[in-house]
Image (cartoon, rainbow, N blue to C red):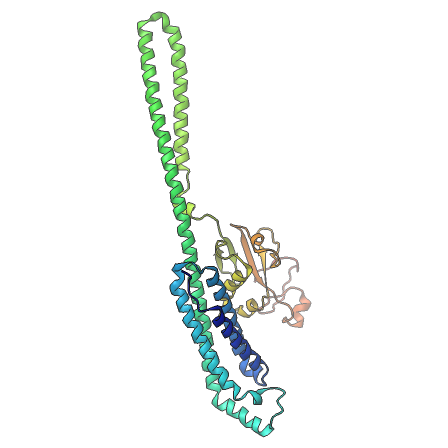
Length: 357
């Protein structure tokens, strides 16, 4: 039984509606002043819908995601209703709002004034609805990722438990065999001692045999200690559950978080997580425009997005994220060669060194 997340047709329909509305708003005369933030929110909503649809398609057989899939379907339906309602409102004013409109100037001016007076509140309300839908989809996708991660960890833990049980059984068997051998060796030693006492002329021969038995006992006890040492050196249950270590990411504002390669398995998924972590805080615009770089903390080598995801990061590694600043710096900051990207304070240090502000 597959996990339900609307249908592909529903997702495509909502994305097309969002794209058409973006094109309409982008072509209007008021887009730069009134609609730019709304356009950004609509594009973010479209991207979130596509990412969520791809995620549930990849995990369609995971029944633990059924409830999240149903809730996501309801959010998609609400998105479609909101976009259709607002699109119908915009259609009445579309001719008057177009940049190259050739309609009656007086009528166009009247419609534009009516738009400014009557529909300003509806724009704010619609933008709030779109933001709410984006946040809801983001939370559902994050919850689904955590569920998948939890399922993977449970599976790894079961495998580790089974391996641990088998190892413990083998060690116990070795210990029993060692104890049996010790008992046999002690019995042989006791028998030889009795023979030496009864037959004096076997004294020298018995001494040699006794020495050999003692050496055998020494080797046996050394083997026993090695077995006990091996048992104590086995990894704990927690260590066994982490089959593959994550790599550590320090983002551009100093936050440190592990990135698990078991369920973040593509550049698109990684960039979606980065976008979600910066949503609503400083640097989100840089993240949306992909104005950042990733560097290996040890070697300082930049990690290029052109590299395949499987070879870009290694388990247990450490990656540093930095924002890229360039044309938006003032002329004085550019001439100084090295300056703070925030307050533009010039640095006296060399330009080829890493400077922390």
